[in-house]
Amino acid sequence: MENHITISPSLICADLCNLKSEVSLLKKAGMQSLHVDIIDPHFSPSMPIGLSTIEQLHHKSLMDFDIHIMSTMNEFFINELLKINPASITFHYETTLHVEKMLQIIKNAGIKTGIALNPATPIDTLKYVIKECDYLLLMLINPGYADGKSEEMITYATDKIRDCKNFIKEHGASTKIVVDGRVSMDVIPALIDAGAEVLVAGSKSIFRKDNTYAENYRQAVELINKHLKDGN
Image (cartoon, rainbow, N blue to C red):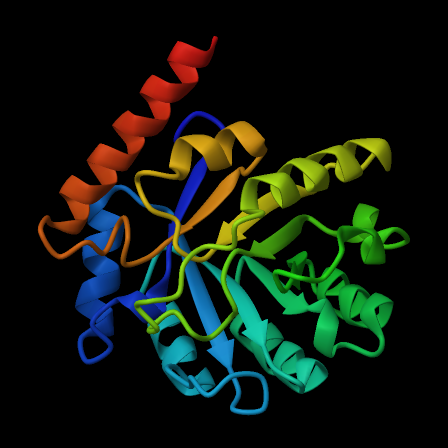
């Protein structure tokens, strides 16, 4: 925890052939939360990690697993993930017919809930369920295409985060805002100013190749702390 900001490294950016040692390095560097994507080919062509891998890794790690489902089969994956007992489960509004039901299934299991929105999905679609959400994940790129190096963060990222913050406040919710997609060192201050509280960190921050994970994390924490201090 960096003040009230959480850095959550994205597992799909790690060395997928050495996940146990990679997660151990992230934990040793000081990170507590791990962002884990589950993607099916109907939602996106990327399918990096399966349920069995996540289950085995969860048993061998002390990090909190925050699962982000990108699938057209939300109920199936939610019920399978309940057996693993992660810290939180987030699913996409765009692929869910019974949003309230999915939230209830997760909450009844004592697991924190979240809803994810694609870049162009308006926030007011969550008017009636926002109070049920522990997290609201805003995709800042098209989900599942993180390997497309030419894809940039959406131009309206900070506007949407700011609108989301106001929306949560207006509805009396305590939902935390998660941002995911091209979260680089350069944009972190602006994302925080807009209202982001959980930063999903990938190839542009924690997994930068020129430093170790520990050094990248140290730099990110220093950047956040300095920015928050200067802003007070």
